[in-house]
Image 1 (cartoon, rainbow, N blue to C red):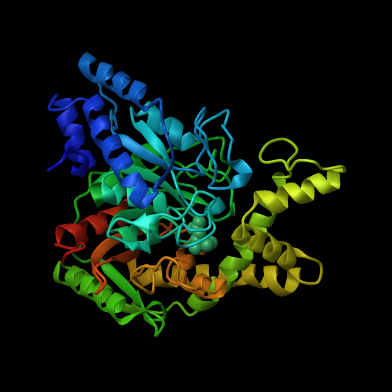
Image 2 (image 1 turned 90 degrees about the vertical axis):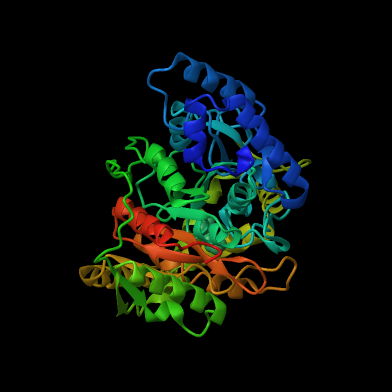
Length: 477
Ligand code: GLN
């Protein structure tokens, strides 16, 4: 097995026992990432300081003593997470040359834990999309079959990890953007409880929904990464206190798993349904108790999600006006012309669509009809989740209705939005959710099982996901 194929756990042990150095490891993983780049387009920027970070890691390891947990491990970071001195574009022409003067808290925590930031990964522009094809740097291709998208919006992070071009990666999940690309690429993608990971330095899309999530090739690796970035941070007022991590034990005995009928409806393809139901049966054989549950607001949740997220985006993206930073159009004669031209030329079509939609739902006369109703629906949905969690410990569901999204296929935006039905409910509820490979479709693409947990029950959720892995779950079951 090549170094770049090994799990973070194995690599951490190898580094500590000097079976390889951080520098060798970086060369191997970076070499793989560059080799894949023409095929996958997973990265926007490679970090030219990575070599220095690897040398520092080797010095720390040579000193011995207390070696930080991620010491020497190459990690990719989605390009909407700020990295001091390293270009952060959000895959937008608007931020094409933006070099942040500070790092996101999650990135600072990774660096303090000895990680080596290998580069910044490609994505949908400002994380708006489902196929990593709305950005200014080209689409991301699926390592399992490049005719298909890597998913989105964290497609670059998922493709890099699945292909061996990173050991671990950070993504962001507002309505499914960590879980869905992880499922398409055959990786594990974890979206923690809202507030469990500081949003400081994550470039805002929809602030009441945005989360930084972890992607890895197995549940233990993801748990290892999440443990580092899960820390209290006064720079994010919505943060929740750190939960002390336990070693995963992976027992599913007596766990009550709810299967919501509404997330297995007719719009879910048969092969996805059957792969997910097989995973549920596997968990039952491992000792879990399966119950049918109801989430009546699931399909309305998609509408509420697109209203709320677009409303927040329209406000968050107002700052890109060409004045202080970001793209500025040339040859403008008045400030008004400069704002208009900078925004017209700097944003892509999908981002403009969301800004327009968001501005519309917040406008006078529409606010009560759209925004307020969406907010009420969100409350109702939270109540439905609370009811489920009185009788269940977890919820099992698909991640996405189909196995993969073909590149270049004609798609109406509304169809793509509607396909987010399985991921947006937990986003609106602020609940932790994880996607784990659970089989392959006829086209060869991996399929993901989604497990959703109680708010702040992140550790328990990852433990259940680990239980599924131990029971034999995975892509090639
Ligand atoms: N597909 C969803 C959207 O386009 C999810 C995006 C995300 O989670 N960043 O909004």
